[in-house]
Image (cartoon, rainbow over all chains, first blue to last red; front, side, top):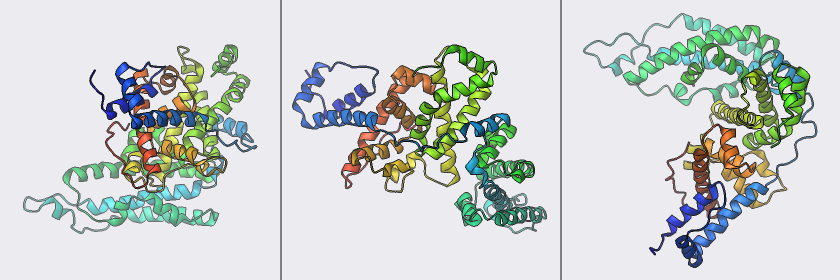
Length: 235
Length: 198
C-alpha cells in the first residue's frame, strides 16, 4: 500500500466533513491516521470546529423585537415595499449624500470629458485640456445646496461625514489619466449617473419629503425602474 | 424545519391577509435566527426580515410546491441577508471577504455578538472566522453547520446542486481551518492558495 502524504489525508478529512453522511475510512487513510499525530490533531480540530459551530448559541433577541413588526410590515406590503423605521430618520441625510455624490461625480466626469482627440495629440494629453465650465453644474450645485440645507435643518447627523464615506477615493484624488477604454466606461457611468440623478430627484420630491423612505428603498426603486445593471454600473 | 399547515399556506396564497399574518408568526422566529446569523445583530436582522416577508408576500403566487415551503423562505432570507451585507459594505466602503483574507489584520465586519460575554474564546474565534468566509461558503457553512441542515436541505435553501453544497462546504472547512490556525498562532502565515472563493 502506498503511504499517503499528510496533505492528502487532511484534504480527505475536510471532504469527509463536508459530505452528506458518515463515510468509512479507507484502509490507507486509517493506517496513516493511526500513526500520524499531525493528522490525528487535524481530524480532532475539524470535528471540534463543526461541533462548536453547531453548539454556539445566539444571544436572546431583545424582548421587544416584534414590537411594531406587524404594523411596519403591513405598511411595507401596503406600499409595495418595506418601510424600515429606523432608516426613515436618516433618509434625508442619505439622500443628500446620494445627490452630492452624483454631482461630484458629474464634476469629476466633466474633468475627463474633453474635446475630440486630434491626430497629433495623444488621448492622454487631450484629457487634461481645460475647457469652459458646464452651466448645468450650477443647477446641480443649487440642488445640492437645497438638500443639504434641508438636511442640516433636520439636525440628524453629520452630512459631511456621510458624504465622505460615500464618495470613491478616486473621485476625490483627481489623479491619473484614464485609458480610452476607461474613458468609454466613464462616459457610460456619466450617462448612468445622469439617469440616476433624474430618478433620485423625482423620488426626493415625492418620497423623502414625507420622510417615509430610506436609502435602501431608493436603491430598490431605482433597480425596479431602471434595472439592476444601472446600479451596478454606477457602483 | 416543519412547514405550516397547507390550508393556511393556500389561503395566504389566495390573498387571505389573516392567513399571511399567521404564516409570518409561524416562521418569524426561525427566520430571525437565520438572518441574525448572517448580518450579526438583531436590529439589522429584523429589518432584513421585513424585506423577506414583503418579498414573500409579493411572490407567494410564484412559489411552486415542488420543494418544501420553508426552503423557499430560507432562500429568500439568505439572499436578502447577503444583499444587505453587500449594501452595507458598499455603502461604507468596507472590504470584501476576499480582501479580508489578504488583510486579515484589518478590523473585520465582525458581528457585535463576538463581544458577547457569555461566549468563550473558542466560540468567538469560530464566529469571527466564519464571518471572514467568502459569501457562498459562509452561506453554505451557516446553513449546514450552524442551522444543521442536511446537504439536500442546504441545496434546496440555496437553490443549487448538492454537489455545489459539498464543494462549498469543503472549501469553507478548509479555509476556516487555515484562518483558525492563524488565529491560534499569530506569527503563522495564512496561505492564500484557495482560488475557489465564490
